[in-house]
Each structure stands twice: as C-alpha cells, then as structure tokens.
Image (cartoon, rainbow, N blue to C red):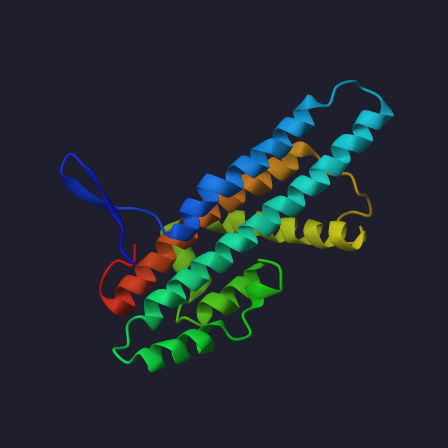
Length: 203
C-alpha cells in the first residue's frame, strides 16, 4: 500500500489514493462550475436566478465530492488493516466488520458521521485531527454549515439556513477551501493512526 516518489535520490511518501483522486478528478469538476458562474453575463433578474442555481449545485457538489473522498479514505484505511492478518479469511471478515453500517455510504459527511466511521477503525477522530491541524476547528464549523445547506437544497427547506435560499459564491468557495484543508488533515491523521497500528506507512 505504500507508494513513493524520488526527489534527488530521496524517497518521499505521497498522499493516499483517495486524496490523489480528489486532487486529480474532483477539483477540476468544481472548477467547471466556477467557470459556468463567471460565464453568465448581464445584470438582470434572469442572471441572478441562474447564478443562484449554480451556487446551489456548486454547494451540493462540494459536499458530495467531499463525502466520496472521506468514504474512499476510510475504505483505503480498512484495506490496510484487513491486509495485516496473515489469515486471508480473517482479513476479509475484518473488512466486512469495519465497513458494516458505514454512515458515509448513505449519510452526509457531517462531523458525527465522520467520527463514527473512523472511530470504527480505532481513531479518536476529531482529537486526532486537532493534533495535525490547528485550523481544523474552524473548518469543522464550515463543514457543519455546508451540510446544513446541502440538506436545505436537497429538501428545499430553508428553515435552518435563515429561511431564504440565497447563497453567494463566496460562501461556497469558503466551504470548498475548508473541505480542501480538512482533506489534507484527514489524510495525515489517518496515516499516522495506521502507522501506529501496523507499524509502517500505508502510503
């Protein structure tokens, strides 16, 4: 599971597959929504309505792609743990147990669901995150806001987000930035946990 690149003859470990996919595939898709927003011309009511719909779609995509990253990172961590037992049957059983009822398979990537799923692999998840990134607490607040808006947009219920569907591009950009920061912190914290459990870097 460990991958490395060489720089001046020195081996450097790189990020998880999950983080690599996020950077390679998810970010360009989000950039396309940014471009669509900026491409809308004019100042009339039609433009305001169109940009609002793009902002809603942008927020949904930021959240869903972050959920996909978190689920992929969890699966990658489970694979590392399941490959540890010498008995293949025991490893397969462990993989099933660690993913059974996984909240990220059907629920939002909110702090509670993340804590529960990564707690299943033995992490004190948010405590571990705080140790890797002092900015994570504020980013966690942003993540909670994003999930509230994701639910509001999905259910067309604005009661928990100020009773108005108005959402500005700058707000969504802030959520995207917070998720990017959390993704890096999650990657480092999960790696540190796996090193402590299996005794070697997983990636």
